[in-house]
Each structure stands twice: as structure tokens, then as C-alpha cells.
Length: 554
Ligand SMILES: [Zn+2]
Image (tube, rainbow, N blue to C red; front, side, top):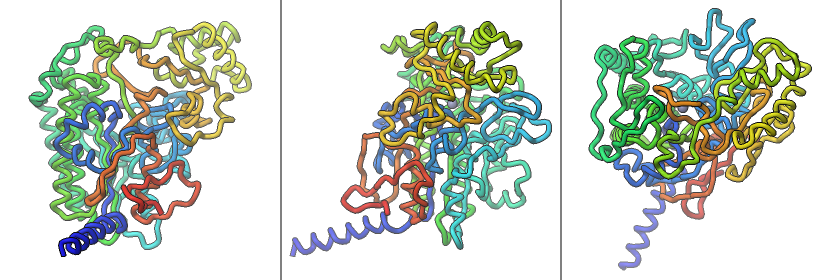
């Protein structure tokens, strides 16, 4: 009798489990925490008590990979809901050099540079640079016959929202310092926004109040032990919470709002209101809510990853995410969460030196574009600026002053000079001729060569003429400046490794520490929803989220 009752209970338990894993979820919540590295996750996972803690109790891949070398916001976000590497999405970097009309200029990943009067800093947001193979989860669901899917997105950055949402989202909102609040595409129909994003007006009013009288909340008590001032050049970081506005110019105050815990709270306020107002996850189809949380990235750049400032951000993010999930629970929505990051990060080298990693440092100014330009000028006799770059190392682009028919020769010469004269200052140099013939890599991303990593974000018409990999731990800026003491963007694992976390009510927890990729997220979610994915149309694979012998991959 007792045994029989146990059997019945076991059978019931199994059926609940099976149902959770076989019926499609009604709402897919995709979250990107900008710059949330596997290193930050491993430091914090045991300390979370809110929303992040819940996710650590689902299916945990602590070592996911943004597998490519261009570990920046745009390439990274272009992989998460599309399942394709940047080489295929077309997003080679955050910015690349190309022609803006008659001008050789920096082009931003989500701008339409053909809009008259546009500049690199004053641009019109557009997805025109994305290739035909780039199809987001939302766009794929909406393309299904009879689809009733709705897609909503919000972020602290335009690239965070647009690249997760896709081309056909119902509402895509992001913070824009020029607008001094959350905004959307130029020309988008916003006539019903008061109904579909009711929190928007209140959030923007709150931001306007902050700009009129900026304030930063005190550090949570558990962050006080992190107080330890570090000199970064003339700056000091690590001496308190984030420090708010840097000047009294309104434009700067609007920019500085991004580097506060408050921007993630504002983003989640808007996301929560999108769910409630539109009854996301409570209608006929499977809906998508894409959220990219930017504060971790801005705070990481401004103060590094290991100080009290990041501690305050982790505590705040965890708390607000917990409230967000509780709000979804209250509405009895059957939702699945996939949380990852667009790239990892690295602490300020000055603190690394204090924290037992003195190999961290900053790249040499002899890698600046004018120096490399002179090397070419001396050899080939060409006049004017010959090379542009965005940071020390990474992509270097030849300007129109380098004759097209001699570019391969010039790149090969520069590579020879760098390899012979920059020993210890660089790890590797690749030319377009090196990269173009390589297949886009697959298999275990931890084992990829440097050339394979660079190839995974190589786009022939946008990538630099040469690509320089800096030595491990070398930051691509010569000195720390206000708002920018640490960064990411390298081909090394501290920038490539990000957690990938899945959570759904009833999903049996397990952990898989071996490498998986952010391009696996789309096929994994698609299989859960029952959305067919044409073979070969993505670079990732379905991750089986069933802890036992059954499979969520069809
Ligand atoms: Zn960043």
C-alpha cells in the first residue's frame, strides 16, 4: 500500500515534469546582461539571493562562449537570438570603417549611414547591416503560418534592444542620451504606446528628475568590504558607489545616467509593464520578451569589475530581477528564461596588479594607427593617413589613400614588420588573405586557434585589413580615463566566456561545465517551442535541457 502510493506519487511527479518540458512555453524571456562574464558569474553565483539565484537553480552552463574574437556588444548581441556567428550575421564589430557618402568614416553596427546628415555620433538606428541569414527567434516565430507571436524588447542601448528583437518586433525601446530617455525607431508607430508600454512616460519622467538633480543610492551593506581605492592614472576607483554626473552639462548628465544601477531598474520597469499591459504569455501564441541590461557594462568600463561599484550593481540587478520574475509568477505565466551575455570583461589592470595578476597591463602606443601608417608610408611612399583603428590592437583598416590593388601586399608587409619588431607586444597578426580562406570554425570553442576565433567574426567587406591580437591581459587603451578604465573586445577567454542559464518552472536542475555557445541558445529555445529550424540555417546546436534520458531537442 505504502509502496503503491509512492508509485502513484512518482508517476504524478513525472507527468508534471514531462508536461513542463513538452508543452511549449507561452513566453520566452531572453535576457542579456551586458559584460556579465563567466568570471563575474562564478564570483557572484553563491551570493545571489534574488532573480539570479533562481536562475542558478535551473539548467546552468557556466562556461558558455561568445566564441568569436570581436567580443563587443554588437557582434555578441547578434548571436544570442539568431544562432549564427558574427561572420554570418554580418556584424564584424561595434563599429567599422567604410564610406559614409564620400567620407571614409566609422560606421556603427545598427545605423543607416545613408540617411542625409548622419554622422557617427548622430545617427539613425537601423538593422540594414544584418545579413539575410540573421533571423531572430522573434522574426522566425512571426514568419510561421498563422503566427500570433508578439515580440517586445527593451534595453539601455539601441544595439542591445534591436539585435535581440529583430526586424519585425512589435515594440523595441532603448535608452538614448540624446533623447534623454527611452526611445524607439524614427518613424515607428507610437500612437498606442501609452497602452502597450504604459510605464514609459513615468520612467522617462523619473529620468528627467534624476538629470535635474542627480543622486546615487548608497552602497549595499555587503559591498562595504569591497571599498579599496585604486589609482588608475590620475583617477581613483574603488572608493565608493558609482559617482554620478561628471560635469554639470546636461548632455553629460544624460550620458552618465547609463553608468548607474538605475538604468537596469528603469529597463526592467519597462519590460514588466510590457508583459502586464499586453498580457504577454497569456494569449494564443508564444510571445518573446527580449531584455538587454546595460549597467553592468557601463559600470565595468568606468570602475572595473572587482570594486564596490560592481558589487552594488550585482546586488541591485539580482534584487530587481527577483521582483521581475515574481511579477511574472503572479500573472501565472508559463515562461522560460534564457539569460546570457554579449561578452565577458576584465578588471582594470591596476587592480589586477594588486590582486596577484601583474601580467595585466595596457597596450603600447606604438600600436597606434599613425605609427603603423608611417611604416607603410616609408616603404611604399604613399601620402596622407593610411590606416585607421578604434583601439590599440584588433582591426586596422587601410584608408582610401592605400591603392586597392596593393592592399594585400601592404598588409603582408605590415604583418612581417609587426611580427619581427613587436615581439612581446602582440600575440598574433592576421591579414584578410590569412582569414578569408578559413572555414567558419565549429566544435569546442575552447580549443579554437586564435585565427579561428578571429575568423568567426570576420566579414570580408567590413573587417580590417589586418587584425592584431594583443597579448593575454593587455588592455587596448594606453591609459584609464574617466568612464573607461577597463574593457573587453579581445580574443581571450575572459572576454569570450559567459554564463548561459535556462530556467522554467518544473525544469529539473543540472549543470554542464563543458563549453557551449551563445549560438546554441536559439536552436535550444526553438526546440522547446516546437519552432522548426532548417538544417544549416544556424551555427549552434540544440542543448538538451532535460536532466534525464528524455530530450527537449527534437
Ligand atoms: Zn562594453
